[in-house]
Figure 1 (tube, rainbow, N blue to C red):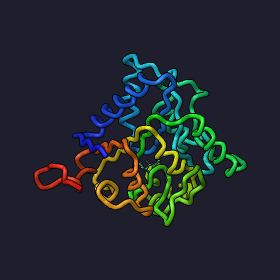
Figure 2 (cartoon, rainbow, N blue to C red):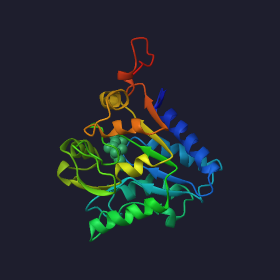
Figure 3 (cartoon, protein in one colour):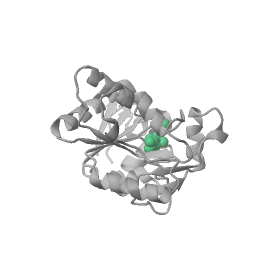
Length: 249
Ligand code: F6R
């Protein structure tokens, strides 16, 4: 794993946008796997800025990691809404190239299979990930096993609690979601895991320097050959020694 530590999420976002530009420019039909939540916002801001400076996104396809069950795309807390607000409405990615799971599909199992087919026919070149305080990636929550395909997940209480900051009331936070499985994530050519803030420091240390374990889902990224972990000084806190240098594993 490559580790890059920045002074601010803003600087980190510019770095990740530059990585995305390299992929976009080097592929005929670039496919980006995208995440939501507070972490990737500086990346989306930087990507929008690059677009305003001339980067063409018209050949890009995007595949999002997850969506809440029960929120349709017009709900301001749906991940679809989030993506339009922070990225899609500001750039020229064609609407027909944008994929998110449908959290209000009448047949959710069929929706999972549909999503797996989309992923299968659009192999992901660059996968952007955030990380939950419990180590989840996408909504692959800590468990005895990790599922390979797209699936329905019961969100863990700590995830519901953490996501409550985006809702008026914790009771409004959906308890279930559709998430891409770990196989799709690990099949991406390149993965960038982003994390900012002190509350992510412990789980980053466990994921990056600890054993590969299903109760720390992000630790499976150690099995991938091209992962860059993009941090700020706070989230990197437990990876550094007293003199501020990266500890060895
Ligand atoms: C969202 C997702 C989640 C988040 C994680 C961190 O699409 O896949 O894994 O990346 O919950 O969320 P934030 O960035 O809000 O701390």
